[in-house]
Length: 157
Length: 432
Image (cartoon, rainbow over the protein chains, first blue to last red):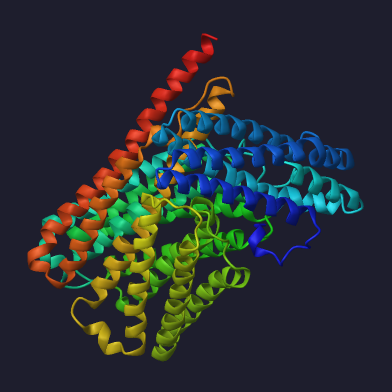
């Protein structure tokens, strides 16, 4: 069920593409936290900005391209994709809160929000990586152009 | 919809919370008992005080938090639907609390009636838990090491409680059973087959999640629970057949498996991408180090049985494994899980129209870290008390009681702030 326990996924699968993007976002998140640790607020703002932009691009790519394709193919529009959309809303609110705290230079508030954000984001990612993306790969395997499109959208961000 | 996609399945906050808020009080009681009993408690594993203190921690603290956490996490993690989780939580929580107190009283006052009653109450509580959970999990395929680990751990739970009840009855009725060998086996099932396997199954999920470490590698994670179970079955067979060599061999392999798991976790933590070391991380570092140390002592005694007879050897393993291992692991997880669950419930309560306070507003990092330092000190003195029981047992007990009382205070504070925030959100929603 969890990504890391499976055989190395096919490098051209939706799952591996989107999972790699999650890890890329994790790195940006960690960079922001590291900058705070070094009391470098400017660097932290820049890193968090990067992180937020990357996450929002990831959400947009899912909500505009991946989820609709999945829903059209399976007819499941109130299923897992709906839950993921709701979690995106919660995560976006946390990004805003965290950015505001950083903007105000309130590092203590930021770290608290970041902790909440991290757990929320990780459990969200786990559900996608282990349940939703494999379902997407299963149902959308006949559409190789979709992966290219997702890749382009993620790169453009 | 496939399993595990929704929080809507998650039981009300109060279901796991009642376990989490009771458990630290039992650990604090264990500290008080050590303070009152003094150095006598460390004289042997079999003193009434040592048995009582051990079970205050294992049944009162560990079993409480573990069953409470499972009631919370099974619906989310494995997508299982527990029928009426609130009622289950009430029954099991009441049974475990009463059973733990009866058991401890039975040991301390040497009352066969109390021991028999404790066995009955604890058995009934765990059986009702297992009946509900196993039925719910029957249709869930073991698609991850975590789910398989949980299933194997539940088997271990049945083993430890069954053996424990049999031991209590044997003790109460004066049956001529080989009690020390069975007690060792009971401890093996409890700490290895149940608590150890469950901890590993949870670690597969929470270590990467909290610390941004790489994930656990596939093969060892699948095999650890199976090896543990196989060793406990071999050990049980060895006790039945009276094969001392097989007892030692299975202890040896189980200890090595435990060291392997703890060592792997330490290595993953060293590759974490988070720069900050919070209380959870430090509690886990203590837990892993102390567990490895304890298992080396166990391994040494399996290879060279005379070591086990050295004064303080067995109590040292107990202190290292319980006060140095499982308690810090669990405290570290509680410090993340409880505020996150509180935040999530507040978030849902606010319906995206009223913001929920962040986790550190519910339970501040500074509070957790201060308590953590107190706990580290208490553990160090407790360990030293194994060597110098006459001097240090009482202060160690007091410190241990204080550190666990503090854990209670921190968790209860988070609950209090959660309630205030909830009232605030309800009011704001009403006025919108």
